[in-house]
Length: 502
Image (tube, rainbow, N blue to C red):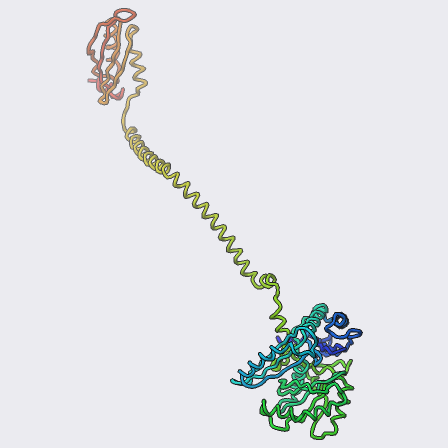
């Protein structure tokens, strides 16, 4: 389901030649049973000398933007093929140490590829492990300014470029999908309007990118291939242990006119089987809309195989890997996308920590207040204990008091006061705990004292009324007599009455 979903996404493959821009667009139109391939060819170069010039960059960008607008390619994944005009591929095979050493030497000599134009060069590599001790590596070199121009134009056109590779690598992928190089290597001849390039493909891997001298003559393609075929055959025998004479099948790729003309030139040699790539056999995975001849787009179909994830074993050098490595993306957006859960967790942790600190500060403040209140709390506790003790004592005393028979002191004092004659007055009344009461007072005459004693004896609550002593004294108002009386309290009037009865 994942692969099918990916395949339904529109993809575009572009091949840049000296004067033209070739494109294959794969999408699933409404009502179609499967993906449909649309082929387009547009001229990008008009007055510019080359793609590396400002005029060339302007014309190429305008042509690519026009194609993207007409085909509605904004946001589509894109792959780009560079033909022999813009890149050179070198193949190294053998022991691992030898491959590593020769790759390093080739990278050091990238600036010497003057046919790619002036200015700095850039390169991309791919290394495949043949077995435990042997590797097969490809190194592709291109002009950095040309590559930057192509990438800038793709960005302005709204394309998401994920693959930039040589044409021969893409052609080898197409041949492998057609199952033409499974049991023996085949020769690939990529024809353009101005020149051609040779390659050897075996099981989807590019074994050689060969640039013979005199290749600019279109009419001499067959003669040049015959001249170098034996050398190519020996190369396959030496480095890949392929039997002699295996190079007998040649596939022609490029424009229809160039392919037909080259095929006629090869017809004189019966040992070779020369034919265009049978691209119709790809109809099992794609349908073609028939708007253009398929022959010029052979390499782009190989790039589409990589974009559509239909071939992952035959991947070669990809300049996008180097571009991504050299381009430093802004860290902030990437961090925001990948680290926001961590940031959210940290923010929540900080908030909780702050709340904890505030609560701790409140607790410490309350603890300090409690320490200052400890003496008061101890006093309150002591007072509470005293209050509890007093309440208990009061409770007990109240219970005792309820059981005691106490006289009515107010009534008794009032009665004693009524018993006083007019010339007698009291100074003190003392009542002891045993019920003894002592009265001290004075009178102008002894008759009033005895009269007062008689009255007290008639009071029911008093018994044993007796005069203790009398003492003459002089007051400011005249001579008087002080007296002391003693008596006992009966505690109850009714009881006192009962005691007086015989």
